[in-house]
Image (tube, rainbow, N blue to C red):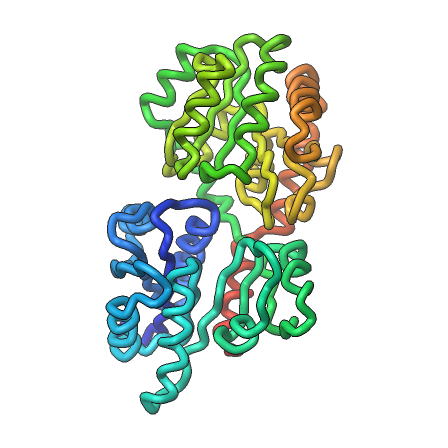
Length: 367
């Protein structure tokens, strides 16, 4: 245990989504490769709870802002104690603190710690200084997102590393995993086709698009059900929209599900209607489980599937097209299932856990 190389992961978010789940999976993978991963996260955060449940080592840090001195000093002490070989930072507050601690090692007579920034989005024009000088590299989940950074020609493209997420497909095979009792009871008492959607509750994830489309879908399938898995800041807004559209009997908001596979197994369709999406993971997991998928033709999503071969791609926010696609899939289950089977072949080839782990280890060893 004492000979294991320490790798620090930091995240300053209180909620949990695809990026945080991927970080936990990478921690498991690095542990299997002989490293000692440690998560740094806010107290009472969703990722702290999940890390505890999964038996991962984590240390709570406040990360109140990007210049939080107590967090910086605590991380300096931890770096001296653990001597990490690399750090991967995921949140805006922890990123700068991690970068400063990494560079500070030089002034303390030690080797600079390579700090990698994990970015799953880029809003506005990217500034070159941070990506060129603060971080050893930036990990990006898709070539689409990489193109957003390359809009600034001053950014060193050799520091932009595309690393597709690694999916623990074997974990999706756990037949003993079940839905929470309250979710199962709701499904049992609300019979009809199930549309599932796993994503953090924010406007860009497109929940509102599906809610509006559902009004039309109900004309053909009155008992259609839309199950939303996730938490986030837009929950009150979505609850109000569900009431306004008269969808209270058709929509269930489950909150965070520890396992998404049990929901996917009872789903007739999985949707990812994002307005902005660097890549997305929900639709990858759905394809592996051979659930027919409908996604937005936006961002990095097209890198995860082939339109009309492994699923359907729809213009984001086009409520009419979304309604038509959902109705078509529910009316054509055999064709939809064939697409889903092709989707499984694609994601196994492209999003393996081994490929992701090898990419991480390579970055650490070359840093």
